[in-house]
Length: 298
Image 1 (cartoon, helix red, strand yellow):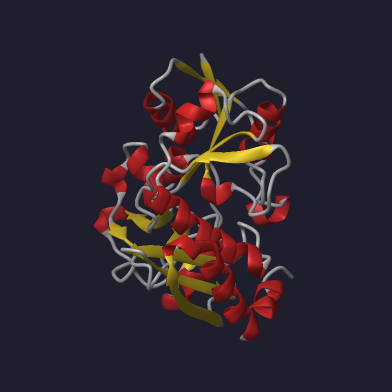
Image 2: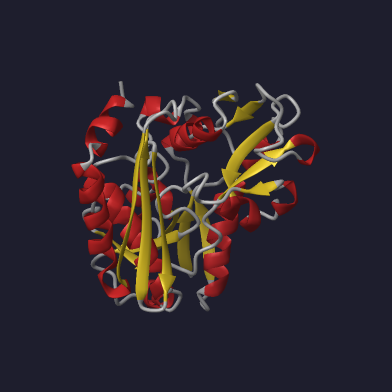
C-alpha cells in the first residue's frame, strides 16, 4: 500500500486523492497537520514560505509516508535535503478568479467594494487596476473563504483549487494574466519522494504521472522567483506558456499598494526553462526589482 501524505483541507484531500487514484497501485491518504493549518495569522506575518509543507516533508523523511503531494506554489524554491520531485502531473488552469455577489466582475464591482484575499500579490494587482477597492485580509479553506461572500462583495481565489474541489460554479470572472499575473507554479502539483527511494514502487508509479510541459513551465516560474529571492508571499507573479518547443515567461514585481511595478517577458527553449526564469529575473533585478520587493517587506 502506497502511503500518500497530504494536508487535511478539502482541496488538499481532493488533489491528493486524484494523485492516489492515478498511481495504478493500492494507495491510501495520510493526513498531516501543518503550521499553516493551525495558525490563522496573515501569511506574511508568520513567514509563509514552507508553512504548508514542512510537516508533510518531515513525515516523508521519517518514513511515515511514501509520497507527499503539495500545491507547488506552496513549496520553497530552494532544494530540500533528502527529498526530490517525483513528478509534476498536468497543470490545472493557473489563473486567479473573482467570486463575487450577484455575478459581479472586477469592472462592475461598485466603488469602494470590499474584496477579500490573503495574498499580497493579489492585493497589489487589484489596487493597481481598482485603487478604490477596500481589500481585506482573508484566510481559511475554500469553503470558509467562499462563505464570506455577502459580508464581502467578492473574494479572489485560484481557479485551480475551485475547479479541482468542484466549486467552479462560484466563479464570476476569470482574471486575465494581464490584469492579475498568477503566483509562480499556481495550478501545478508537486509529488515528492525521498531522494534515496527512486527505485521504490511508489516513486516509479509517481514518475508515470509526470507531465514534462508542466514541469518546464513551473520550473521557469520557480527559477524566476528563486533568483529574485522572493518568497511565496511576496508581491511577485510569474506565468510561463509553451508554444511548441518555445517557452514564453512573463514576470512581475509590484509594490503592495499597486503604484509601482516592474515587469517583463522572456522567450527561450522549453528545454532551458529554468535558465529562462533566471534570465528574466536578472533583467527585472537590473531595473530595481530587489529594492521594490524589499520595500514591501517593511
